[in-house]
Amino acid sequence: MQWIIKFSRFFSAAMLVIFLSPSLQSYPPAEAIRSSYHIPHDYRFSFRNSPSFRNADECDSVSDEISVCDPSLVHVAITLDIDYLRGSIAAVHSILRHAFCPESIFFHFLVTDTNLEALVQSTFPQLKFKVYYFDPSVVKNLISSSVRQALEQPLNYARNYLADLLETCVRRVIYLDSDLVVVDDVAKLWSTDLGLKTIGAPEYCHANFTKYFTAGFWAEPDFAATFERRKVCYFNTGVMVMDLVRWRKEGYTKKIEKWMEIQKSERIYELGSLPPFLLVFAGHVAGIEHRWNQHGLGGDNVKGSCRDLHAGPVSLLHWSGSGKPWIRLDSRNPCPLDALWAPFDLYGYGHGHEHGHIHESS
Ligand SMILES: *[C@@H]1O[C@H](CO)[C@@H](O)[C@H](O)[C@H]1NC(C)=O
Image (cartoon, rainbow, N blue to C red):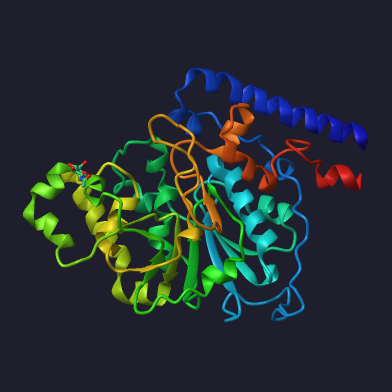
């Protein structure tokens, strides 16, 4: 048994070296993110088992056969993109580690090309989850080129379709990006009061809103009028609490698609999936405490430089921007705050600071 483990550890390390080192040297950081990071073929053996997580005594008791429609569940939606898989797994791990009632969380995973169900099942044996296939052709013709290739991936747009993809009995969902970790009980975010609003997110009213749209957009009175009589503030779409009942009723998916259609011919913005959300929701967002999205830790879109935390308490750390902690840690050139991501990484055997579950049980 021992030699198999040794061999597979060697093998994963070798794969990392083979896949990561040549490309990291030859690509600028922004491209390296998508084009160089590949995970070995048998994904199940690429991640260590997560420790098991149990509800505290004070939680509602949850049976293993609980239905996705059970009203006591907290619903979280995350994409599983091959290039961000390590980030998604770390995000799930971080949520479970900090939840008072981890067994009461139901995960909705959105995928495009691969069946990653076995990977999730083996990494998190007790997890309540469902995998949803998001058909890339739904958005293929709606995606325009943006400043970063990673922003053009179809799965980036899956958040627009959560109201359609998830069971209609799911009335609310927390959408989370794959490059973040939660360091607080996600149930607190879940219980946010949205009032009459459809989505909740931390708002940044001092950010210069103008720069998210092109000069052409502001020069066209019909477009600019969109924001008239709205107290618009920037918000990040990587952390959102969404009222799916209201979303379905108001048909927001179609409203977002309408702006994506316009973008194809008019070039009204430079980023990917974010600006259509700003167009539809800015000024109509339930403000959530800033602690729930300490964003920008990935660094600048162009330079990939290190960032510091914003002032105030922290419940969620978000490596938005072009730099990702797993890439920087592997390249042995991490930013200081990447050390806060590392404890949630389950990738590889004996990779980083701890040894794998399989190794211990052998
Ligand atoms: C906001 O950004 C726009 C476009 O980049 C710029 O022209 C404008 O001066 C900025 N406004 C402020 C207050 O910084």
